[in-house]
Image 1 (cartoon, each protein chain N blue to C red):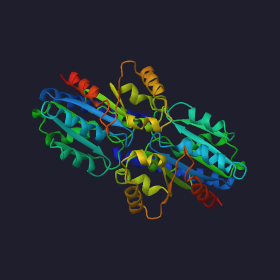
Image 2 (cartoon, rainbow over the protein chains, first blue to last red):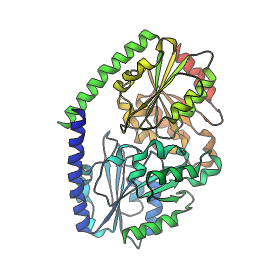
Image 3 (cartoon, each protein chain N blue to C red):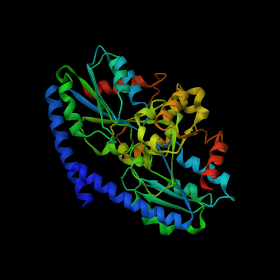
Image 4 (cartoon, rainbow over the protein chains, first blue to last red):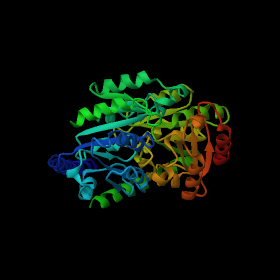
Length: 214
Length: 214
């Protein structure tokens, strides 16, 4: 019974995700669903990315949080269109929540829409929201056992950004194991070692983004 | 309809949580539900705690993970009884999952049972599993905005361990804001600054534990 309900919820979500896809395609905007654990650096990555692409790529952002609008304020201060979704307790965004706010964004004037999901390494990977691509961030501080313990997100993501790489000298973390296990789960995943604080490695991510959206 | 289903699931969980409580009380074992984001240091804290309390407090552990048994192997190597639960995708432990494995633990021979929840700062806080106390870990690397963005877990927890405090010189994190916001959400929360790597601050946590279980 419980399983049947869950499956119905996923089916309904799938239908709405396809509707969102259609809307994005017609508007000519590419959409990236950005996921990670809490505090891995999603908003910091967006800040870096917006600064680097501004002037050449028209970016919009949907911010997903359980509560509050701190992240939307950070993005807004960079002068790009942003909408905040508060899930009010739900641990992931779903396609309905996205559909509800699309009218608040000038989709026809955007090249690229980032959707920052709720900080959670589990559930967001289960719900399509109409994105072209899923990208994930793992903070190096989370440790090298994460790919094998949270496999779905690594399997679903086209890109893995390993953030806070500047802290590597201070951590007992086996970076090669992260790479190895992520690739074993998803041989085509593109891996970037970055520091959103120092800017290290961001250029490779930006180059990949430019290729992906062109 | 969806809300009604969710509420029924929570009701059923509540009943089973009360049954677990009864079993723990009769066995004379105190139970701590340990929660955090992925990679904040739950298993490392358990390793430290078991080493410090071994000989004076009889400890058992239930490990919750989506998949795999790495954490149970780490605990097993310390010579304490441990059971691994694999949720197979679910992002939190529930009271049924706990009830199912209780027969595999020598409850009557334990003083203290740690239940390490799935790494997730959201959903585990919603599901009682029969614990006496909820305790949470926040890795300092997750940043100072976490209490206000993930309030429920801070509200539900009796203890907050701020881990990886040894990394403080390398981070732009406002530790005072974490303390202030956690206390504003939960004025009685007990806060410990610790490093599971260096051992810093662990003595205060151990002292609090001894008081809590006596």
